[in-house]
Image 1 (cartoon, one colour):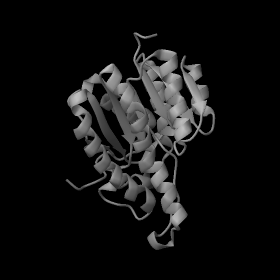
Image 2 (cartoon, helix red, strand yellow):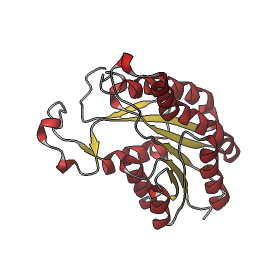
Image 3 (cartoon, helix red, strand yellow):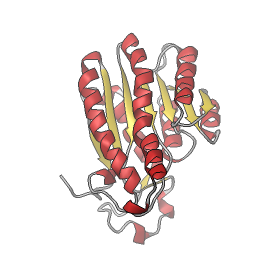
Image 4 (cartoon, one colour):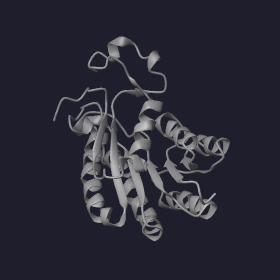
Length: 236
């Protein structure tokens, strides 16, 4: 088992996270997945990996899935940080609790996981972290104020982390998906009119981008925010 690379996927129970579990397993990685629903753990086990039930808002859960992967496989090569959905609403109608939940889901989750896994990366001589963000952080959508606010902060954190740990062979990047569905064919055309490619992205397509950023194929890429939105955002 020590010859196989290992990916820890947080939020691997459905959607993009589940697609990442499948992609890394198909690439020969051993997978360790966590989600609050139990589906992430079940999927990982189905694919020959390990998993736990837990949330990215709980430090003990993040530590537990890391410990499980490390004790089972003796290494961790990459961490994929996914998250659930925070409250939506008009900017000044959101409560302090709504904003606090968003900080937990979209920013502190990554910071906490970085604290946990970085000593292991340093011990083994390298590793990668890929965070699932959103393409709307650079053109903030009023539909998702909590998400875009804290994920914009995540863009800065990734830069700071990448600068400090690049000399140690450790990389961190964010992937910024646009409209993404498990089956894009189910999305009516009126919902994709603003996308130059004229369709939604599949979760499997995005998982391949995540794999690229996590793997040696992007060995000179760190601290970046890579948009995978079909050209929907226009800012340079």
